[in-house]
Structure formats: C-alpha cells, structure tokens
Amino acid sequence: MAPIHVLLVTGYLGAGKTTLLNHLLALPEVLSRRPVLLVNEFGSLGIDRQLLRPGDHAVFEINKGSLFCICTKTSFLEALATIAGRADVGLLIIEATGVSETRDIEAFLDEPTLAGRFRLQANVCVVDATGFVKVAAFLKAAVSQVRAADGLVVNKADLAAEADVHQVRQLLQHLNPEAPQLVTRQGQVPADFLDRLDHRRSREEALSAAPAPLAAVSIRNDRTANREALADAIRTLGDRLLRLKGHVRFPEGLRFIEVAAERYTERKALPEARGTAFVAITWAVPRHEVQAAFARAFPSP
Image (spheres, rainbow, N blue to C red):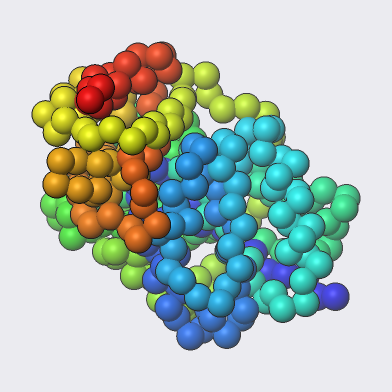
C-alpha cells in the first residue's frame, strides 16, 4: 500500500492552529484527499475537538499530555495503527499541542510497526504575530517548532502593528531561513502554499518529557463564576498564564473564553457545553497555586 501522507500543524499555544485546520477542512483540494485528523491537547478536557468543523472526516484525539511526553506515546501509536489499517484515508493531518516537539513526532512515525505506512509531507508552523517574540525568549519549544518547520504561517497579522509583523518575520528568518513564510489572518492558508513545501527532517534528538515548569490544570465544576474574581485570577497569573481555553458559567449563562498572549476573548458557548470546563496552561507556577487562584472565582452557593 502507498504511504499515507502526513501534514503536521505545529505552533505555540494560541497561535491559531485549530482555526487554520478548520480553514483547510473547507478546501476542496484537501477534502478530495480523504483526510483524517489526529488532535493532541496538553490537557484532559478535549476542548479542541469541539472547535473543529464538522464533516465526514474521522477525528482521533489524544489529551493525556503533549506529543513530546512519553506518556502519550502508546496512545499515539495506537491511533496511527488504526489509521494505517483504513483504506479510505489519503491524508493524515496532525494538530500538535502548542508545546510539542516536532522531532518526537518524527520518531513515532519511524516505529517498526508503522514502517512505510506514513510519509511526512510537510510540517507547517503557525506563529502568532502578536506574541511570538515574547514567548521565544523563554519557551524553548516555541523556537524549536519554528526551526523544524518546512513552512511558517505568520497568523493574526490583522491584530498586530505592521512594525511588529516585520519584527516577527525578521526573527523567523533568523531562526529558519530555509522555510517560506506566509503572512495571513484567521488561518487563511491556500492549498498551493502547502503543496510547495518539502519536508526536511529534524537533526535533533527526541525528548522524553515536558519541561518541568510547564503545567496544564483542568478546572471543571457546576458553580457560577464571579466575573471580577475570575478576571483577578487571570491578572494575578499574568504572563505566566500561557493559555486558557474552555467554558465558564457566568450569571448570564455559559460563555466560551480564551486567553492567549495575555489577550482575553469571550464568545457564545459551543452546543456541547454543559458547565464550567476549561484548561489553564501555566509556566513556573505550582499547580496548587493555579487551582487556588481559580477556586476563588467560583464561590460556594
């Protein structure tokens, strides 16, 4: 059997990977290749799957941790084995968590049980034009993703000043001069940009665990949030709160909230939502402090 082509979508937390994925799932050029999705989240609630565009494509989900964490290897290989056994798959799209390491994914594809069944066509890294310069200074995974990429998508350009977009592009050129760049908004990537990419294998050794200061805390309860207390928890964590995503029950009802690059957004709840359930990803904050900060936002009745 011919190998299944793999499109790997990486990028730091909140860069817009799921938005790009939903854009691709609306393109006839992609749908004609009979895609299957493998989505990984650094957290236990499986929120990204709820955000995906519905369709005929199958979706496999791993939410035990990051793809660079050894705890996910078994689940990842099991999913790949299942996909490899299907006759209706022409393209596998992997959406990696925002703190993943590309070289680990390549190692998984090389496992003897999967030899010859997959071919990594391209690794596309999504970069947040509004926040990458800041996170690149302290989060190694964000830089590693850029260096390993075959193509770089500078997303959210409409939310950043022209000078900031230029600065990001210069930094990306320094980190990975071989990768073509595309500046866009809302993940609007044309299929021909992906078709022009050629995969270059990473030369770095695989990792076996997440960096120690990184943690994902899942918050789930049936209480109503105090808006002021929730905002105070977010302010208190500040730039140590790398990402927050999920549903919160406010007095007026459920809302879907996100924090990325210290920017808070809020919108209508997804149909599947039943109560407060969100994931907070933090850097250099003890887990109990994160839990305590958000516990104060949900007072007992």
